Image (tube, helix red, strand yellow):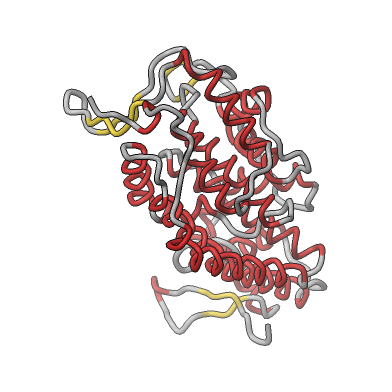
Length: 367
């Protein structure tokens, strides 16, 4: 039988090689400082928008890692409502989407950055408001009472990647984790985020949702490391991009010894890329702000506002009149009138195409 790290006595006495990490950690710290400095220059309104966009990515991609695809408009509306942001076109928000958002905001947007069982049970209830994971009834808001294995593969050909600690160990293991997380240690707060992620996901204390809660805990610790409650980069988005490598390094570390240098190095590399990628997201927020400022006196209808907002955020592909009609649930003639009106007002331009290939772009000239 494979001997996992948690079988070792005092298994959380982790060690790592500072000489391998110091250069990368220094680089991450430098990028982190530059990002926070850049954000502070944006002003209150744009900071709120940058925080909103980052949280949307974080919530959606943390769920996507587990194979759950959330609706972006529902996530956006839920976050906007909870943060008190002005948001047009609010949609119905299902309880499960609202719950994921509530957990993430509780982890990152509040001053209280301490963990205990009651808080994690609340998060778990948020993730599974109906008491089910898909078709299956699960234990919600409590430590699991059964054994836990992480497996992949078709039925009859499963591969066990990890076997978690037995249920009778969970109360003690989690209390040790809380004591460490809430305490102060002479280590860099970013390193503490890497260790917290590994520690929690190795205990795997819940029937389901352990990965999402581990990433929420990580974001909580990273917000402490940043010194701000708002989020301006998304670790979950980068983990989703490197999902295969993420599971591989976790499996390797959980089957290894107490030297977790490789895990921390991978975590820091992932974090570095997340911070670098945040520049593009912030640039998009600034562009969106400039666009609406330029056209703040232009009269447009709700459909037009909705579609322009999509074009400024996460629109995929090229905008055609048929796509406009489908997305706004109007006739082709109404879609063409909406588009023609926006072209006349200087918000859209027609691309050099014709016939069925006709499509349109945002007019970003002068921004």
